[in-house]
Image (cartoon, protein in one colour):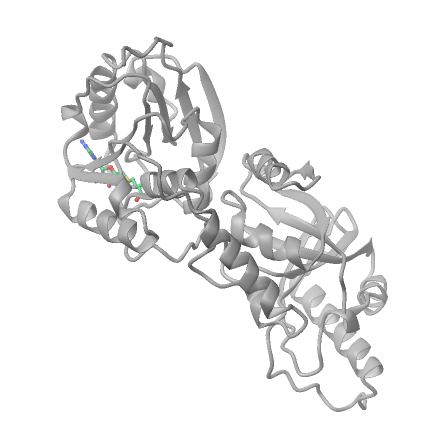
Length: 383
Ligand code: SAH
C-alpha cells in the first residue's frame, strides 16, 4: 500500500488562502489554487489534516492526473493508475462524483460508468479474478471522484467522509446556520485573539462563539467525529489513536475567555447552549436572549462577529433595512471594537451607515455573501 500521497484540501471559494495558512501552521508546504490547496505527505498527514483543519471541506488523495479527451483515453488513464495500492479486495469503490468543466467529455454519468469499468478491470487483473464475474463490494468504502477540467482528468479518493464542517457537536440548528468551517474561516480572517472580548449579537445556534472557543482552547475540530479513512485496512489504527491522544493533550484548559452570544430568539439560545455543551466549551461562552439593539458594553478592543438575517432567508426587505440601520446605531458607540458582518445584502453599508474598511467576497453554500470588515480604533487598555 502507499506511503506517500499527493493531497488536496478543498475549500469554499474565497477561503482557499485561509486553508493554506492553516496547513502552513501545521508545518506543511502547500500551493493554493481555485477551490483547493495542494499538499503532500504520508498517512499521518491525512490523519492530521482531517483532524485539525478548521476551514477546509475535505481532504482527498490524488490518485492520478492525465489527459482525457475521449472515453478511450479516460478508460486507459483510469486503468493505468495503481488502484491495487489503495483498494483492497472486497472494498466498496463507488465513483461517487464526476465533474466535467470546459472539456470535450461532458456527459458526467458516462464518465462515472467508464471510470468504474476501468477500476473494476484493473482490480480483476491484479487479483486474478475472472472478467465476467462482478467484484464483491462489501467491505470498507473508498469514494472515488473524477474531475475533468479542460480535458485533464484528476482522479481522487475522498479520505474525509461527511464534510469537515460537520464537527459532531451540533445537536440542533436554527433556521439559517452558518457552516462551522465558514465560521472558523471568518474567525481566522478577523483580528480576534483569545485575549479580546468577542460578541456575536445574532448568534443563532452559536456557531461563531463555539468555533472561537474551540480555536482558543486548541480543541481539534475533528476530535468528536470519525473519518472515512478510519475504516481502511491499511491505515494504522495506532497512528489514529496517537493523533487523537495528542490532540486531547493539546487542549488548553487554563485559558480565560470572554465570549458572549446573544439572539432575539430564546429557543435558539437553548440550542446554542446545548451545542456548546456538546462541543465541550459551555463554560467559555455566555449565551443570553437579547435584541441586538440592546447591546451595551464598557469593554474595549473587542470583536463583534455577526451573521444577521438576510432578505433571502429570514426577513422581508423593509425589516432588514430597519434592522441594519439599528445595528449601525447600536454599534456606533463601540469605537474600539472591530466589527465583521456577513450578509448577502448589497445595500448593507448604506443601511448600516458606514463604509467598510474592507470587503471580502465569500459563498455561504451557494449564496454569494460579503464579509464587511470595520476595524476598531486602537487604544491602550486602562487595566
Ligand atoms: N450564525 C447563526 C445563524 C444566524 S441567523 C448560526 O450559525 O446559527 C440570524 C439570527 O439573527 C437568527 O437566529 C435570528 O433569531 C437573529 N435575530 C434576528 N433579529 C434579531 C435582533 N433584532 N436581535 C438579535 N438577534 C436577531
